[in-house]
Image 1 (spheres, helix red, strand yellow):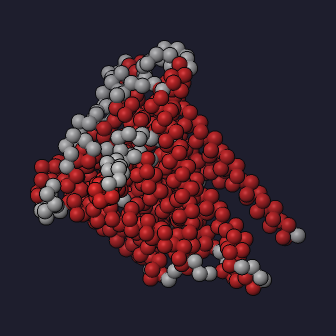
Image 2 (tube, one colour):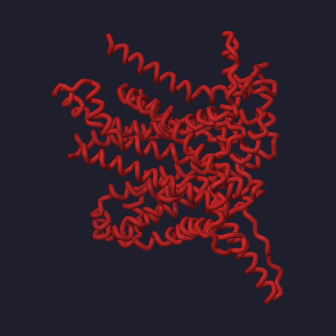
Amino acid sequence: MTRRNARLGGKIFTALVFLFLYAPIFVLIVFSFNSSKSRTTWTGFSFKWYAELFQNDAIMSSLYTTLLVAVISALIATVLGTFAALGFYTMKKRWRNPLLEVNNIPLMNADVVTGVSLCLLFVAAAAIMGDFTAWINKIFGTDLKTNFHLGFATLLIAHISFNTPYVILSVMPKLYQLDRNLVDAAQDLGCTFMQAFFKVVVPQIMPGIVNGIIIAFTMSIDDFVISYFTAGSTVNTLSMTIYAMARRRVSPEINAISTLLFLAVLILLVIINLREIRQEDKKKRLQKAIAR
Amino acid sequence: MKTKLFAVPYIIWMALFVCIPIVLIVVYAFTNDAGAFTFENFKGMTSYASVFGRSFLLAAIATIICILIGYPLSIVMSKFPSNWQKIFTMLIMLPMWMNFLLRTYAWMSILEKTGLISQLLGLVGLPPLDIINTNTAVVIGMVYNFLPFMVLPIYSVVTKIDRSLIEAAQDLGATPGKVFKKVTLPLSLPGVLSGITMVFVPAVSTFVISQLLGGGKHMLLGDLIEMQFLGTAYNPHLGSAIALVMMIIVIICLRIMNRFGDGEGQAVIL
């Protein structure tokens, strides 16, 4: 009897925690369809805020920036990280371990510290570059730009810097699962090093690379703090626009974006999960075939 | 495979954008506007002792609440059939994938004086709840935002615990309480420790939650640092010094905790 009670208690507890996790999101979604500006009183159904959302230039341009930075930084971080992981993998432990420690710094550090430290670097670099071009101008009489500001470039660099560690962490385990003999075998059978690399190594670590790119992309979209310190005053990401709007408190367009983003994430998660299920099916079928 | 050189571009990248920025923080913390060496920045910090105290206190409270919710949840979740477990982990991760600011914004409309909780209380004739812009609201925001970071590591460790160890303990006459204390708890400790790190570090350094749910009235360390760099009180030297001290205190806390954890882990193996 007490056991059954304990189990029921466990179920109720789980339900309460999920209520806690989802109630706020549910509220956001419901009030995105509210016809008045109120966030708390229901006055009737409307799509008004969605229409206004697409009319809002600030939101649309920041959405564009966010997606652009996320795509570019995820791609660069994936290439940089995959090659770095390959390099670390063949290094001696004496070199690899300290490098992996440095790689972990952006993951362990508080976002504020990472953001602020990059901000200091970029401001200093902008000043040095300004002095340098001014000096060139003086000597050669050219007319180069002398005032550099934080903007899209610094935002992109910051995103690549915090994305790459995640890529490395998802590629490294796949490399350790790799059978080194396979590469030797391919080369013995007449492959050049490049052929062996692209035909043997890359397909084997592909799941890690794909995983890395997905993590990098979502981290980049979700980031606020580091972007806030590195984007300067002219470029805004979606998170920065939302922050500015939320501080003014009443803006139901935020609810509309929340709903759309929530749907996007939901669809993405379903796709990823379907892919995993399909891969597992494939593996099972393969195992069956081998068993036969 | 000779691919060592593949890492060179990233090593240069790390030197430029990971190492130099941290060196810059240290340099800025020990210099003044004229570029001269000084301890002034650290002396100037004493007036912010209360902010340090409040940040670490609120982050600690939020972390403890996360353990109190997250630990039992992980245990309960691990007892469900495996299909359910997959759905649960996905449901835990889903809010994490939604923008951090939106999650915090959602609580503003719930906790407001005319908000939904107050309205519900009003329906049953209770007085409204007015906790927005208080420390309580900030702690709720922290727990809400960082709870998944506590649940996921604990859950992943708990599901890997060998069932036969628990059965063996039961066979040898241990009561359920003793099984928990001697087997489950020590084996799940690594998960709890990494959960603590993943909750405490972002909680102690947040400025978004305190600004949106605390109304900017009760400053936290994050707010203080933000103010020195982008806010009204522009002073990157003081800001760097605060960031440096915060970083060092956090590292010391985590080291002490992990040492304590390692000891426990070894005791189990012995």
